[in-house]
Image (cartoon, rainbow over all chains, first blue to last red; front, side):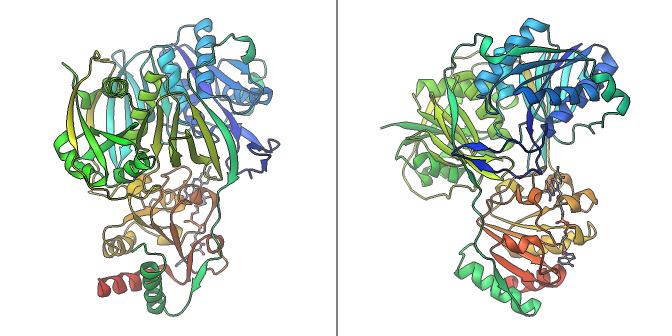
Length: 255
Length: 318
Ligand SMILES: Cc1cc2nc3c(=O)[nH]c(=O)nc-3n(C[C@H](O)[C@H](O)[C@H](O)COP(=O)(O)OP(=O)(O)OC[C@H]3O[C@@H](n4cnc5c(N)ncnc54)[C@H](O)[C@@H]3O)c2cc1C
C-alpha cells in the first residue's frame, strides 16, 4: 500500500495570535502539525503495519513546515515531500493542484489521509478538491476506518448523536477527525532515525500550475470581538435566579 | 432578479429550525430564493420555507439513483440544478451533512467555498468567518461563481417573510457516481436536541462530578423550553458526559442565543466553541474565574443551588 498523508504546519492552538497589518499575524509563535493531521498520520501507519507499504508525508508550506514533515517521520512516516510556498495562506484550489501534481509524479496512491480541517484557516475543503483532481471519492470527519474486502468502511458523526456508516471504493481521500485513534508520541530513537529520512523538495512557483477558476482572498483579520464588562448578579440562589430570568427576558430578550 | 439557492436540511420530513436563518442570509440582497430539500419531500419543505421568503422549491430527481444513500450523486444533481437555474450563490447550514454536500458541490462547480460563515454579503462576495479556532475573525473575498457558503447555525437570525412558493420538478441529467454508499445511519441512543443547532444551551464543567448529576442540567433545559445540554472537556474526559456533548475547540462549535456555563472556568479552548453565542451566562463559585471576564451575566455561587433555583423560577413563571 502506498499511503499519502497531507499535512499542514499551523500555529499551536494555545499560541496567542497577534495581528500584524490588515491580514497578517506574528508568525514567530510556536508552530506544530495541524492537530487533526496527527490522526491522519496515525491511521496511515496503522494500515501500513497491517497491509505493508509506505507512508509518505506531503505538505505545502513555508520553509519551516519541514519540521511538521519531520514530526510525521518521527511518528513513523517513511519519506516526505515538501512543496515550498512563500506564504502561510495558499488558496485551497492551488494547494490541491500542487498536491495532485507531486503525488501523481511520485507514485500511485492507494489511500490519502488528511485532517478534517486545518485549525488556522478552518477551510475544510482542500481534501475534497484534491480528491476531485485525482478523480477519487472523498469522505470527511471520519471517526472509524477500516479496509474490508477491498473497500474502505468508515463511520462519521452527522450531528445530534447520529452516525453514518459508509462504504467507499478505493483509492479514496479520508479526512480524519478526533476519536479516529490515539496518535502516538514519537520515541527518541524514532526522532533520531527520522533525521536521516528523505524529503523531496519542490517549489510551488515552479510547478507550472494553471490559475484556478475561483479563489478566496483574506482581506482582513481582527480579534474576535470581546464582550463588555459582565453584569454581576448577586444575592441568594433564588434572588440570583429571579433577576437573571428577568434580565434575560427583558434586557437581552433571549427567553 | 438574481437567484440564490439554499440547501434545506430535513429530519423526519420536517425542516430543521436552523435552516430559516440560512434563508434570511440568502434573502439579504433581495434575491429570489430556490430551496433544495435534503432528506425530505418538496411538499413538506415548501410548507415550512415559504413562510421565510422562499419562492421556489426544487424537487430533484436522478433516474436510477437513490440520492439519500449516495452523497456524490446528490452533489452532482444539485450542482447540475445550480447551473440549470443559473444560481449566483448556494447557501447551506454548516452542519456535518451540510458542509459535506457544499464542499462536494463547490468542487464539482470549481466554485469558491467558505464554510462556517458568521456573515455573508453575496452582492460583494464577502464573508466573515472564524480563523485560528475562534481567536480571530477573518474577512474573505470570494472570486468565481457561484459562491458557495456554509452558515454557522443561528449566526444569522431568521426573518418571517410569507409568500406562496412553487414546486419545480427537476430531473438532473447526471450519472450515478456509485463510489460512496451510506450503508446505515445509526440513530442517537436517546432523543437529544442537536447541540450545534440549539437556541439555548446549558453546559456543565468538571464540578458536575458525575454523569448522574447532569440530570440537574437536563431538568433546567426542559424548563428553558427545550434547551440542549453541553459539557466542557474536563467533564467529558472524566466520563460524566459523552464526547457528543463536548463544546470547544476539540468538540462542537455552537452559536446559540443563550449559553449558560455552569462550573466552567472559561479556558480559551472552551471559548473557541461558544464565543459567538449571543448571550453568555456564567455560574461559578470562584468570583475570580476567568469566565467572568468574558461573559454577559455572572452569578457567583454553587452551580447546583443556582441551577435548581433557576429551574424553579422558570417553572413558576412559565
Ligand atoms: C488541545 C486542547 C484542546 C482542548 N479542547 C477543549 C474543548 O474542546 N472543550 C473544552 O471545554 N476544553 C478543552 N480543552 C481543555 C481546557 O483547556 C480546559 O482544561 C477545560 O475546558 C476545563 O474544563 P472546566 O472549565 O470544566 O474545568 P476547570 O478548569 O477545572 O474549571 C472548573 C470551574 O468550576 C468552578 N467550580 C467548582 N465547583 C463549583 C461549583 N460547585 N459550582 C460552580 N462552580 C464551581 C471552579 O471555580 C472552576 O472555575 C482543551 C485543551 C487542550 C490543550
